[in-house]
Amino acid sequence: MIDLYPKVCNLCGGPIEYVSNAMIYGRQYGSGFCYRCRACGAYVGTHKPQPRKALGILANDEMREWKQKCHNLFDPFWQGHKDRQGRRKNLYIRLAGEMGVDVQDCHFGYFNMDQLERAYKILERWKESPPEDLDYEPACGSCKDCYHADWTDMYGVMAVSYTHL
Image 1 (cartoon, rainbow, N blue to C red):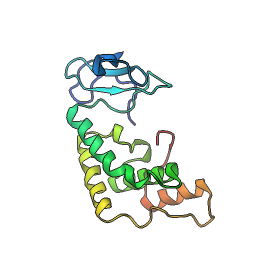
Image 2: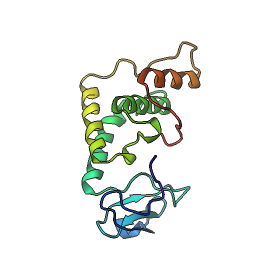
Image 3: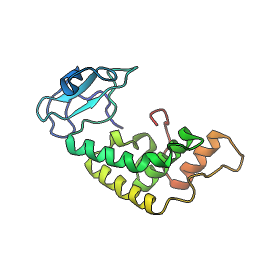
C-alpha cells in the first residue's frame, strides 16, 4: 500500500516537508500544497479536496517525465470513449494484471522508476497491438459489479478499491 502521508522520501530517505506548492511552481496550483524532500528536492502534489493526501509517491524530474510518457500512451485508450470512466478503470485493471500489482496500487503516480519503465513497455505493446478485450461486456449485460469482477478474474489481480482510478 502506498503511503499518501509521507514522512520520509521514497527516493533518498530524506526528511519530507509539507509546503505551499508555490515553492515549486512559482504560484499556488491545484490544492496549493505538496510534499517535498528537503534533501533531494523530489516532490508530489496533493488532492484538492484533501490537501494533506498526496497524489502518489515523491518523484524527481526523471520520474515525472516517465509518468507523462506513460500517460501519453495510456490516455488515448480511454479518452473519447463513450464510457470513459469504465474504460479507464478496466485499463488499469488490465495493466495491474500484466504488471503483477494490486489494482489499488496501479496508478502512474504510485509507480517507482522500475514500474514506470515496465508500464511504458506494456503500453507501447498495446499501442502496436491493442488488446482485443478492452470493450469486454459481462454476461449479465451492464452490471458494473460483474463487469469489474469478470475483469479481475480474467487478469488475476486484486480489485480492492477503484476510488483512486
